[in-house]
Each structure stands twice: as C-alpha cells, then as structure tokens.
Amino acid sequence: MILGKKVPEIRFHGFSHDWQNKEIGSILGETKRPVELLDNELYQLVTVKRRNEGVVPRATLKGKDILVKSYYGIKAGDYLISKRQVVHGANGIVPESLDNAVVSNEYLVLTDSNEITAKFWTVISKRPEMHKLFFISSYGVDIEKLVFDVTDWKGRAITIPGVAEQNVITDHFQKLDGLINQHQQKHDKLSSIKKAMLGKMFPKQGETAPEIRFKGFSGGWEEKPLSDIAQVIDPHPSHRAPDEVDNGVPFIGIGDISDAGLLDFKNVRIVPQDIYNEHSARYTIENGDFAYGRVASIGKIIDLSNNVGKKYTYSPTLAIVKPKSLYPAFLKSYLGTEVFKGHVDNKTSGSTRKSLGVQDFRNLPVLFPVVDEQTAIGNYFHKLYALINQHQQQITKLNNIKQACLSKMFV
Image (cartoon, rainbow, N blue to C red):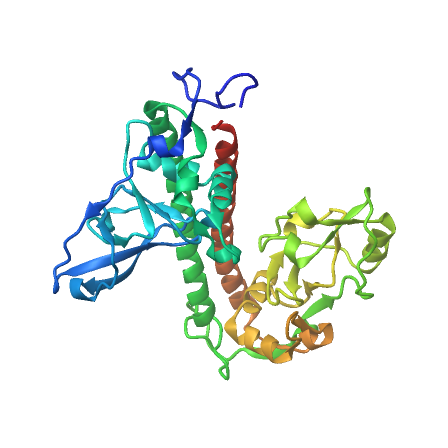
C-alpha cells in the first residue's frame, strides 16, 4: 500500500480511486435458495475441501436420503464458505459441473453484489490477511475443527476497490491460475509416463530382460552390486552436524535441494571453510554425479550437474554416487525403479526416521545391458526428466509471481 493512500503498490492502468473500507456484512451477496427435494430425484451434495482445493461433490443421493434439516440450492459461479475448519481458508467457487447441486446450512452461499463479486472472493481469500480474519472470527479447542462465527466475521471490515477493478484483478489471477494448471497437467502427465516406462524399460523382479526395448537390442542383462559399477561416497562420515557460522559454505541436506539439483538456500546450514576443505580432499562433484537420499527421504535422486565447480558440502542424509562403468543417466534411472526401491526397502531401518546404511546401499544389485542400450535408455529418461523439471520450474515461477501479486496488488 502507498503511504497515506488506500491504493495498492501495483495497479492496472486506468484506475486511480482510493480503495474503500467496507464492513463485510454490508457488501455480501448472501443467498439461501430454497430447494424442494423430491424423493427419487438424484442430487449432488457438495462440500468445500480444505486448503483452498475447491468445491467438490461429497455424494450423489436421492432426495429422500438427504438427511439434513436445512439445505439450499447452488448455482455455477456461487462462492461457498465453510462454517467449519475455516482456519485454512476453506472455500471455493462452484464449477459448471455442480450447477443446481445442494449444500447444507454449514455453508455460506455468496453471489455477486453491487459491492463485490463472487469471483473476487476467490482471489482475496488466498491472502494471509483474509486467513487471519477467518481465524479471529472462529472458536474452538481443536485448531483443525474451529467453528466459524459468521456474525463476528460479518462485523469486520476489508478494503476493496470498485467492481470494475475487481473484475480486472480477478481476470489477471484466473489467467495465472490457468497457466499454473496447464503446466501442472503436463507435469503430471509426463510423471505418469515416466513411472510407466520405468516399469516397462527395466526388468521386473526376477527377470533379466525388460518388457519394452529399443530396436536392435536383445538378450539378458548383467547384474552386479552397485559398488562394482559406481563409487558411493558418504560425504560427511562423522555424521555430526558442523557448527553453523555467518560466513562460510553451504552444508546441503536432503530437504534443501530439488530432484533437479536446484538449491533452496532458505534453510541451508552455513558451515566453516575447513569443513569444505575436508570434503574436497575426499571428493569432487563432476558431470554425471548424482545424490541419493538415504535418510528420511530415502530414494530421492538428485542431479548434481548444476553444482559442478561450486563450493558446496553435503550432509550424510545424502550418498554421492559417481558412476564408473555405467552410463550415468542409465544408472540414475535404474535407481528410481520399483525393483531397486524394493531392494532398498529391505535394507532400511528405523521407525520414525528411516535410514539406509551406506554399506548396505553399496551392496544392492543393479541390472544393466550393453553400453549402447544403456545410452539409449539413459538418453530417453534424461529428456523425460528435463521436460518434467521444466514444467516444475514454470509452476514454481508462476506461483512466486502469484504470491508477489497477492502481496502488492491489494491494500
């Protein structure tokens, strides 16, 4: 907000008026559409999922089986607010597929009013400020089951622009959400393809040849322990977390880095230079190296190619794998198969914080074909992983833009 004025930091061209403080109860377009339930007619009962996951059908029932005292009809475009579990902002817009469905009186049903649109509620309800209003207007002992005090909430105020500006802001966020959903759908589709092909392009348990092969390859695959085909390094053998300092080098744990090797410095421990000296005396990260999660997030495979030449140290929650005789992209893919995960599961220990011993990891069996087939398979999965990571990066980027807009485009 610009100091002294009720206007946002970022604004669309053509709007200049101050935003107005409005009591929520005075601007709501609340509706209660009566519904006559016919005994043998089918109706969709609707609920609002928590954490802003949208409006979903709870069940399809005959009118005579809907055991609620009060119920209302809803239309596509209505905005629903749950009177329970609202601490996370559980709410949502009614999609076309649920037009003419039914809700109980546990929900507020909002339509467009002269002051605020139903769609604008979908945007402002994603803001922390609105979550706070939901929270302070709720009561109860269990934070996951707070009851929404609608009367209290209606007496509180929010700052909003005119309907014309609301519509422009809403369109902007709908386009952002549309782009995020497009990338998410492509990401999920490619991830499903990856999972399916990992099961078909590598031998199943007890077999030595895969179900699907590239043309020109035949015969059984060879088996060796991982230690015969790759160097497996425990990066911090003492397993004691080094002291944290203000100026030093990153000490990267399993939770600090994405599968694609992108580092999130937000919670990374910074450790003294002498820790890096100890690590660099024992190993250097090279192209083709990757990390394998062996504590907590067991089986998480992390590409380290982005970290070549950088002064990073690695926590013992990771094992660093340096392929020797196998094509790196092939080995990395093989370690992601269900067959290999099964071997890992048999060697993990611990109840709350599971771990895989380094020596047990080194002894696990790996099946592999001739080099040319390794290369063909590795290149296929390398391209697939790259596409998945591209979409994930776009999703992250767009979500960051969305969060910035939610902060700067409102008062």
